[in-house]
Image (cartoon, rainbow over all chains, first blue to last red; front, side):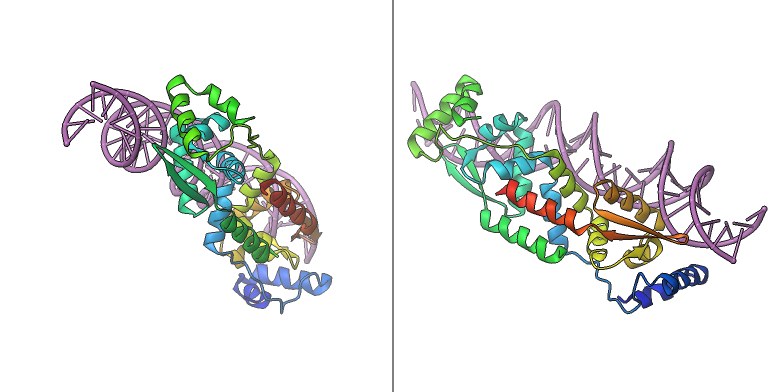
Length: 125
Length: 125
DNA sequence: AGGCCATTTATAAAAATTTTCACATGAATA
DNA sequence: TATTCATGTGAAAATTTTTATAAATGGCCT
């Protein structure tokens, strides 16, 4: 969407004020194409990272497999809470899962994480 | 904190189960040093980015100055809501502000944004 | 094999946080 | 001084996080 178009959508008084201002200070070109969209998937990824526990899990599991009870201890949190966050991360394909006996081990899916981060840079810059 | 230490903190039954499992499958080394901490500032940055409106603002204002009413139009949101999010972004030092007459123009602080993103990569990898 | 035990997941409700809205105030111009 | 753009404040709405409890899964023992 062009700035010009946005300007047209303002009410008359606002439009006049802004036009006048832009004419005098030339801070913004009317022909600029304005881009605001970020993919929902990306926003979702960022949202997942924005929780300290989930971010801690991702960091901790980047280098090793760990089972739920040890993850919970390391983060000093309730096991069911950790389990909940693990599911969230798994749903985003950010974790690998492996069963050993009655325990389940998790490890960060580094490829996927890298993919998200590079998409973030691309979309944001 | 070492895995060994975490293991000791489990209750006896849990510890036995995990020890047994680790002994047989060797999926995790007891001497591993586990690191879980991410800086609060970084988490905060990610949280700020995790809102679609704020992310949209950052993207839109990377290349140009825009006033609040045009930002609101571009994102199709109430002006007061945009103002609120702008303040959040300003508090994180992610925006430059400039006044022209009665209008206020904003632009992304690209250096700061880059700094955050590179810290994110460093801390996460 | 059948029944128990411990780990983990699932579900639902409570608590906390975030987002949005509504209205009052502040700032700048005419 | 009146008008308009933008901010500040506080409350309502929505979402997320946490807690509590129940259920499922898989191994172990007799």
